Amino acid sequence: MSLSQPPPRWKKLGSRPLLTTRIFDVASVDFQHPNRPEPRDFFLINPPDWVNVLALTPQHELVLVRQFRFGTNDLSLEIPGGVMDPGEDPATTGARELQEETGFVGPLAPQPLGFVHPNPAMQTNRCHLVLIENATRSAALKWDRDEEFEIFTLPVEEVYARAYQGEITHAMVLNALLLFRPHWERIRRAARA
Image 1 (cartoon, one colour):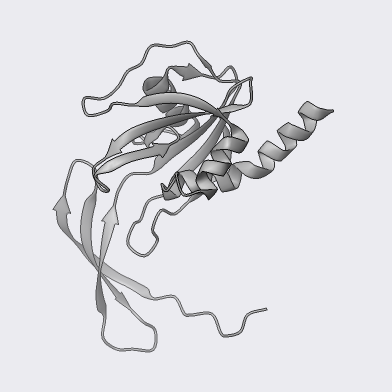
Image 2: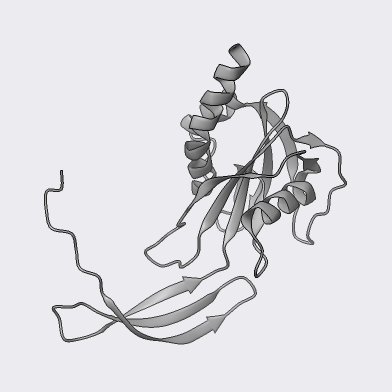
């Protein structure tokens, strides 16, 4: 039950590019509230869409990577993922990134789990989340110049425990684990039957 009226949509009036980098653009965008005469200037970050991959092994372990992250100036425990190429679909990106970063591949097409908006207050992109089941390590690594990963697998419930204990802090990984939970429960039930 809503306790107040929904807010109105603002009207987008126009935008001006401010900055272009190799990973995102920044724009100044004017929006106008329907009940206020003066437009307001907001800054939007326009990165490409991303994909994060939950890769489940036949032993019901998830493939994880630990890598250095420049934003936090620290190591981060994550699932594999990366940037979508223009026109690429999330399943293709997910399978490619999993293979390049970890050497794991799956025999079946990746299953979409959904998508999230990383930060809708200022970012325009989406992070797609895909599941690759029965993933095995059978391909060569193909890291980008600035990539280095510690690659390992952990039982699914241990991954959830590490998330609950604050060892996994990457928001998109936590989103992926949230959307994976119903699939994992279905897989566990089928394994017990």
